Length: 443
Image (cartoon, rainbow, N blue to C red):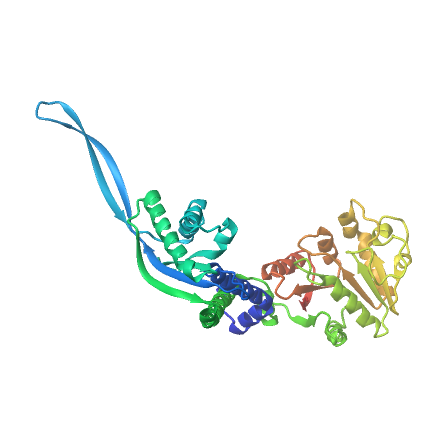
C-alpha cells in the first residue's frame, strides 16, 4: 500500500536540511553575480579619466557552398562528369562557445597591430584585452562591442577599426555576409557613466536575486523528491504502524531534560530485569541508550550490571584488565562477578566483552551463557546488554534468544523502516521477545 504524504513531516524534513538549501542559494547567487560580471567584464579605474564607445549588431548569415559531382550519359552515349554547386544560407545562432570564439578573434594580435598602425598608437596586448569587450545581450543573437580608452578622440576610431576588422575576419573565416548594426552609443565619459553604473548595480542585484530564487526552487525540489523516496523512520506513529510495536520513549541526545526521558523509559520497562539493547542499523545510538538507561536504574538504588558486547573500553569503567565475558565463558571459572568492573557510578558495574576469540558466537549460544545470565539476575536487580546491530551480528542474535526482553533503538530519519521490521522478525524467529522501540533523535 502506498505511503500517504504527510505535508507536516515533509516541511520538517526540508527544514532539517535548511543548510543545504542555504548553500544552494548562495552558490546560485554567486553564479548570478559571475554571469553578470562575465557579460560586463570591464575593470574600471575610477581615478582615471576614460571614455566609452559601444556598438550593437547581429552577425550576418553564413553562406555554405556544397559541391557535388554527378555522371550522366550524353546523346552520343558517352559518360560525362558534371559538377554542381549549391549555396545554402544559414542563420548564425550565438551561444557561449561561439561568443568565446568571437572574443578570441577580437583580441588577436593582427587586429591590435592594425589599430596601432592606423592610429599611430602603442597599445600593449594586455591593455588591449582590458579596453575591448564583446558581450551578448541577454540570451539573444545581439552582440555588443565596447571600447574603453582614455582619449575621447581615439576611442571612437578604435571602435570602428575593431568592428571593421572583426567583420572582415568573419567573412574570411566563415564566409559570413557581414554584420547588421542595430545601435550605436555616443562616446561617454566617467561622469556620464556614473548613473548608468548605478543602474548596472541594480541589474546585477536583479540577476543575483533571480538566480537565488532559482537555487531555492531547485534545492526544495531536490529535498521534496528525497523526502518522498526516503524510507527512513520519520516519526513515532509511522514507526508504530509499520512495526506493530509500541514506541516507549522519544529521546533527544544532548537534551538538558534527558534524565527525565530515561526515567520515563525506566518506568515503562520497570518489570523487565534482563534487557537486550540492539537495533536494525548502525549508528542508531544503542550504546548511548544502554549507558544512560543503566545510570537511570542505578540512581534508583538498584544494583545494575551493563554487559558491553560492543566496546571493551567502555568510558564508565574505572580500571580494566582486559578480561571479560568471553574469558569467563572460555574458562572453568565459576564466579562471573570477578569479571564485572567497577565504574564511577554508584550501584553500576560493567561486564566487558573481554579478549575476542574465534568461537564467540558458539560461546554465547552455549548453556554456560544462559546460566551466566541467570546468575547475574540473582546478583543484580537489572541486567542490561549493549549489543551490535542484530542484522549484522550473529552474536547479537545468539544473545537475543537468551535475553528475556529486547529493545530496538531507532535513529529518527536515519534508520530504515525495512531494517527495523526485519530486525524485529529475526529476533522473534529465534524465540526472542521484542518489548518495543526507542526513537532516538541523533544530533
